[in-house]
Length: 257
Image (cartoon, rainbow, N blue to C red; front, side):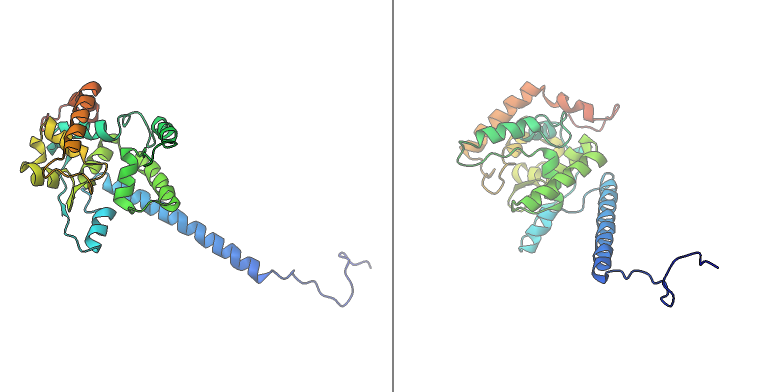
């Protein structure tokens, strides 16, 4: 009688032995994959939570504390910030804020062209990118930080509306030594709450945003005053505080204008 499966008599069938090293790398890749997915899920959950609650601190503030500083920081809600401040920040830092999805490609192209002859390279970071950097990352520039900043910017644009991005930016941006956020800045430099900032005061605050470590408002230097003049002119060209009216929900009587 013929055997149904041809094999040599006396030699039982055995499974092919798996390379233990290959199995280790497969498990490691699978573990890393699940780790990355878990990190991304946790990040999106954190961003969704931060969409609704005040931001308690930021990476930049924690870094300042780590170095022994005592930062001044108090969260203030959007409706308690004078409408002159958001438009001044947009005019100074990101005039296409309402048009892009986190990255201003036109500004990037212009910066690449200008940096061919500029001694000091010009940046093209949007407000969304600055929020990602200030909230989660560190000061020193590197390809790693830029890569993380890009991913975080995309996540922030997905999870937050434009008004929330601008609200967080105004609250965590550094305006001077130990001074983080528009509340601390308006109290320190003008001795008023942020709801009472006028156009000139808002322009002066926005004028130091590119480099709060080098520019000062106590007292403002001629350069800061000149930059504030330019910001006020840009605000007028954009249409004034009403330019950002689209960010306010209808029928909000508490918004200061």
